[in-house]
Image (cartoon, rainbow, N blue to C red; front, side):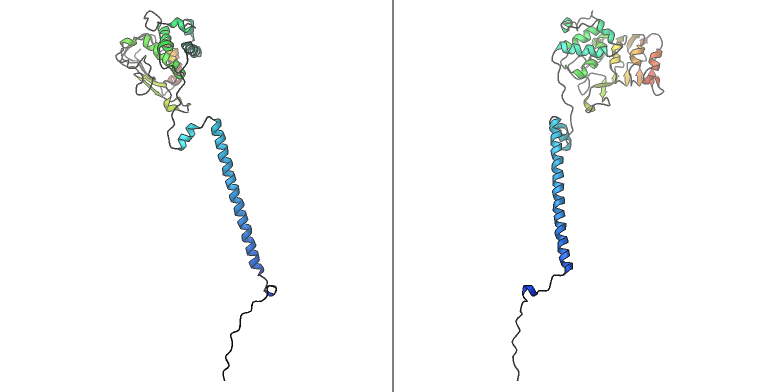
Length: 292
């Protein structure tokens, strides 16, 4: 006779009688806990480092005056040169001009005829009986509307050339003696500019690199003031009515002058040794075109 057997109930062993946890499993659990702690610590250190770097950048940017240019560069915006501050008074312009002339050995002699008081230059720019140096200074400090220190000396040098070599009768004198910058779309005719190789905003600096006034009805002698255009590399004055001796010292002192076109003028004498031997013109790579 079959006897029905009741299913046996699972009886859970008391806690104290459970088998102890495997040492391997215990060690694995401890290792995972330790790894998690190190990950948390590493993440904290990374975030702290980022915070320190950001704080340092903010401090440096604030110290440098707002950091406008770097911010624009990071945003993909092309930075532009800061607008120069206009000079406050004609007297201040004259002081700056005299300092620039004194720094050049060849134009320092202009100081003997140039007044120290800007008021003494009043009305002299249009007086054809006055020395071109005085006329140029009068126009620069009393009539020129640009009034920017970084262009004073270059504008003076070209103004002397204009007054000394019959600028009023030139074939093309577009924008000369105007308040426009020397270079640019509305710049002075024949003047081409570029960077000095040192300025951060070199594309916007008015440094005359080429002066092309060929076949433009210039007359008279080349003035010493041309030595102030220290960044000029190419000079075209051919096919004019220029006369007298070549200013060897002035042209030869230009440190990067490489090519000159002076042929078809009325120069007298020969090419001075000071012109052949000074500056880049004394090297094999230079070109001097002159039928004198």
